[in-house]
Image (cartoon, rainbow, N blue to C red; front, top):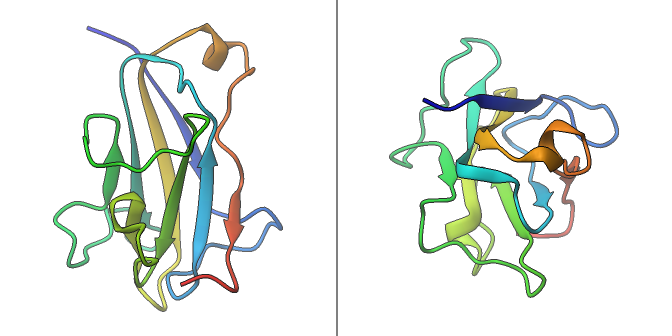
Length: 130
């Protein structure tokens, strides 16, 4: 048995609600502090259920072997109605006209999570990408 800690965001870096028709990015610094694994899920704010899209599961997790990491080991996760070219493996689809929230689950987190020295970046709206 292991502890699960979560981080949630329903607004972007400017405090605006996350809308499914817009495009966003969340930067995860390198060395995500978990012993077991981590996951990112997208929920519909109205129903509080996972978003239902053409993707089989609205999630990205550390057990996926096709993620594209940055040179420094960090990871950019993209959200929007369409995947950015070349970033499909790091993308979670959202639905236009739907507010959504992101949940990061850390399964058996390490000390840097517990003492707040590691945190996901804020969700940034991308106006000129994909």
